[in-house]
Length: 108
Image (cartoon, rainbow, N blue to C red):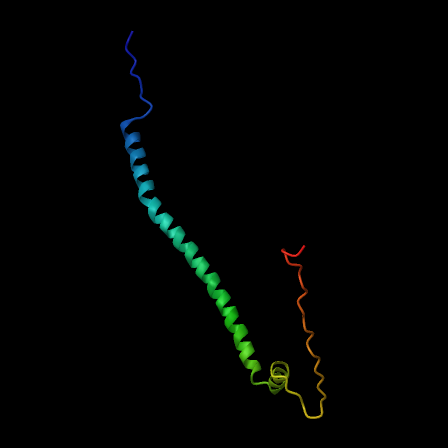
């Protein structure tokens, strides 16, 4: 009988290939994680930027209303309680709130 040469499941070349692949994966893992983190930050900033643009547009619309005389008259009537000549103003007195007496803890 002749001796049979046993093949090992991992040859030297295969082992070196696995080591090289592991080194490449470990080398690329950190930059990939940084890239993904920066992409998420960019997405958050883009969303915040879009919100700020909407706010700016709303404020521009509000400022454009300042040029409208009807808007100015309405604001004067509401905020400053101005009236037009000939209008009657009725003032309703505020109801006074009197505190209700509470029984004291010492009185029995």
